Length: 174
Image: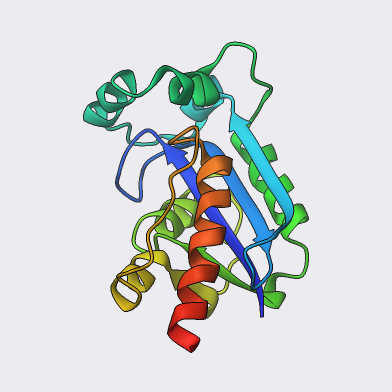
């Protein structure tokens, strides 16, 4: 089975939240990263879509590690408009039905779906292809997630989660 894990950084924790960073990796059963994707969103361009910014989440960002803040909000980051980032994500995924899509299923997929809708596009991921990382946590409680060096950076989180997912699946299947 081919796997993608994707992670979103946002300015809220509801399905109405705007995405500010998308990170994803394609990985094999051993957790080896085969390909990666990361886009930083031009935050000013989000004003075109009537998102609901959650101000406690904005304040939460102010209290994060400096490396995390710079990896998402740094002034030297290349940024693209949301519509462009989502288009590039679809292009990067390729054949949509070839993958299982791992994430925190009650958080990332609803936000991703809403962001696709806001830009006038359909969500690319078939709902039956979503897989939940939190469920693995309960099925393989002895396997621990090794956090990324830069927490709350979507690509770094996705890389750490790919290894975690593969370790959990091996445990469950053994």
